[in-house]
Image (tube, rainbow, N blue to C red; front, top):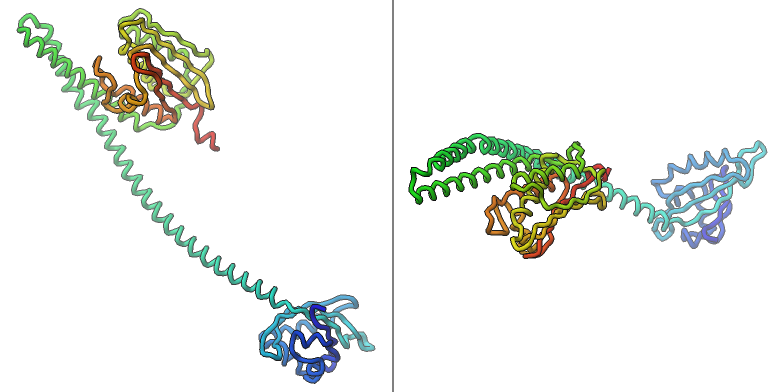
Length: 390
């Protein structure tokens, strides 16, 4: 059997019988166990577990026939080592009044099981200590991170305030002298007959510089305003109507009664975008298509739009002088950079268009080839990305 059997007498408080297997576990023979008499339990059971014996005997005294009581405890072997035993006891004999006279039990060696359990408990305790320490470390790091975030937020707010102040200065303080310079140039050119040809040329040069400076200031104001906007606006626009309005506006501005534009956009296609920003982007793309038309062939512009993967893709294609995406893309979308030397331009409009789209969660791409044409495609999300995640 896996353990050893015994019969314990409740009157003599000693073992009446122990089978030979006890020697394999405790090192004592059956005769030695019986010879201990009433002191057997005190001799064999570990001192720290002896307080369990009284409660266990009381439970046995209350057992009905065929019921059992279990106790786990440590014992001292004859060799001086310690074992864990699990005893399962049941009533074996009763007195005339029905009280328990003897109980029979089987004790099994559970040392390996107990040691494994205690090792697991110890590891769990160590793990809890490490987790508690790590939690404190994380709390401290989080507190430090929150402090850094708060400080960074203050810095960013200061930067926004400075940007707003710069925008105000560019809008008011700088525009006034530039406008005065432009008016002076117009006054001088209107009286050109009183000047020499060299002076007229110098006045024209001054006017062109004033116009360039005014365009730069307007571009800077627009670029600064873009930095202060985020997300999709609630404004709902019919894309086809917006495109047609921009086509007509560019046609009037360039002196054409009708631009050679083919529009392929569904009547019910809508976008969530700020009208001013979308019109600024479309006008920039159309204006560039007209400005960089190839003189050797009639200008053709095609505008198409469709919904792809949760976003509206709007493309503006032309057959003008063209662009090389690999070589020209950085210049095309760079601030104050240009891919073509002529005709003159500010190098702001496409930079602003890209920034507007990025701030709204969109994007713009360029395809084409030199001497063949260019195609700009803008991508506008149909809903906030944060809403999709939710």
